Image 1 (spheres, rainbow, N blue to C red):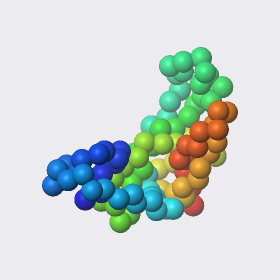
Image 2: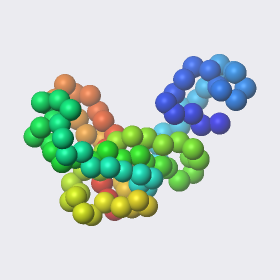
Image 3: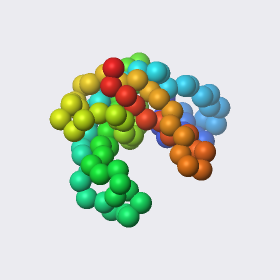
Length: 101
């Protein structure tokens, strides 16, 4: 059973033995929306931006909330194929983001 986000105990068998599985490099858009109003002043310069729910083939029921970068507003659709990219933040944290294929 694959679980995301990672947790200490398997929800299926209640076991503590877990292993890490890297996310596949390709995914697809399960659902998305565009944000046009800033909830915080720190994101005003990013408007509009998208929030996507991404699904990975081969990992049933695992979905990740992220963004598709470098995509115009009208060119994002459910089912679009994506490549995983890692983007560094100002503090050095790496975030999983996606680009359309």
